[in-house]
Amino acid sequence: MIIATPRGDILHGTPAMNSSGHLLYYNAANHTNYTTTNNITYFPYYQHSLPVAASFILAYLFIFLLCMVGNVLVCLIVLGNRRMRTVTNLFILNLAVSDLLVGIFCIPTTLVDNLITGWPFTNTVCKLSGLVQGMSVAASVFTLVAIAVDRFRCIVYPFQPKLTLLVAKATIAMIWVLAVVIMCPSAAALTVEEVADHYMVYSQNYNMTYPLYSCYENFADPKMRKVYTTVLFAHIYLVPLTLITVMYGRIGVKLYTSVVSSREPQDAAPPPPPARHEGGRPQISQKKIKVIKMLIVVALLFMLSWLPLWTLMLLTDYGGLGEEQLELLTGYIFPFAHWLAFSNSSVNPIIYGYFNENFKRGFQAVCQTNSCCPTGNRDEVTGRGTREGRARGGGNVISQRVVPWNQRRKCVGFFFFKVINLHN
Image 1 (spheres, rainbow, N blue to C red):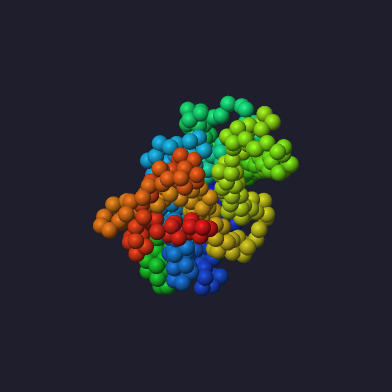
Image 2 (cartoon, rainbow, N blue to C red; image 1 turned 60 degrees about the vertical axis):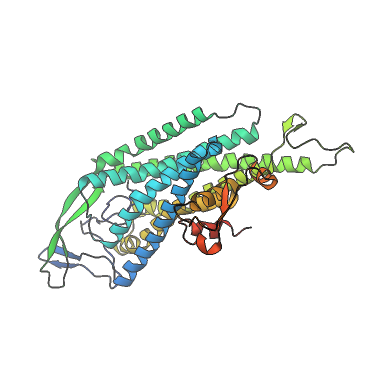
């Protein structure tokens, strides 16, 4: 199953052929944009009119730039600062890597597939793109589960041994192994074939025609396609996100009972320092609560962003849709569903900066270096030795530089400054 390719050129996920073998196609200009002559069907090379194609390009380019800039910054922050290499941040780093793969392999190929009729790449690209696309999505889901398990153990069972960095690295390796294994059947079945009696044309007089190729999953038994779709839906969406919901639900109950117990009347004696334990239970710091809120938002947005695409893929396999309905799906609804799913890989860095002071200062520290800001007339201020820095970052502070506002616009992360500081 191809998760990240929106057009009928991938016959699984967005079927391109009906039972009679005709390639389904929908164009902005009209609904009958293919011509059949002597049992040969001709399609225009470009699927959409210029305004529609331009809107697709701008929309996909926007999330591509956000995805690349934001996730590269996350990787630089975690890898460039030893204090940021915690278990949770390692999982966030892995999530950023999988999001980068989505940006590199999913967004461009999906955009091209939206604009051009047929599959314009080689058989190797067909197999690799399908494998990497599905693998990156699976790795993202499994990483979200690992993060939820780590937070669940830390909050609900605080006296159990915490995950070590070595265990976290082993978990990340296992995540990628599982992601590759679950997508191997798709990579093995994917192939590029020429569609018989179907051609692409550049002009109305048909003087420039090209064979139409299709990248699709060629299972030996057609029923296996539905089975594989269902297995993927269960393993990389339904079951993982159910586990995430249950664990964060338990965490929410734990936090609520902790807040209620802390508000109960206390004796006249002064309260113990925050680092002490009350009643044999460790207190949960506000910083930890904020991190949990951030992770819940990340998981919730992932669930909502990918739900429409999964719904459409199941609908095309099990809904028994007619030709006109499939034309509408492949022409407009699937491209929007893919854009929404890919946008999740772009918003995660903004969420980190919004909820987490360390990531926010990390974005500023990376963007306000000599490579993007002038060296003259700049006061350097570090938060590591200040009272405010210790209070906010708990000793986990990244040095930051203050530069004139007009010079910040030269930084590659200027947009992130604007977004993550909206709540201050």
